[in-house]
Image (cartoon, rainbow, N blue to C red; front, side):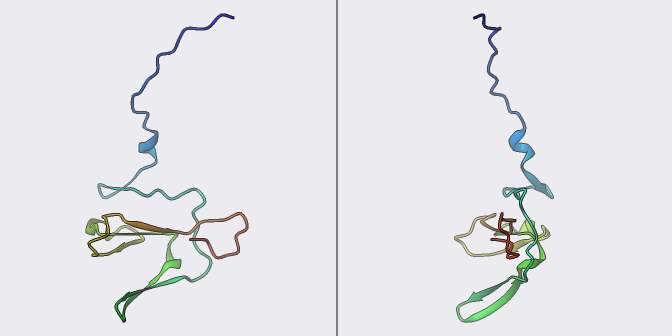
Length: 109
């Protein structure tokens, strides 16, 4: 069997990873929402405490995801919740609501 001309492998940047990144006011958002991201159908809340004192109530049903972190430049990013704890990174954690196959209206987390 005859083989065609050998192709030379290219290790150049394809741009595929860059296509999945998100920018907000010049800052790369390291989290990309999955295609199954959905708004929750129930009114979820998260209560923030410091010791015995409740600091605030976060209404999680207002957007499909929340990003927690220390980067104060992201304060205007929808769903960003700032934390000052030294153990947290600039973009530390995400709560993501998603559609599940047997979605019961809870939205998943």
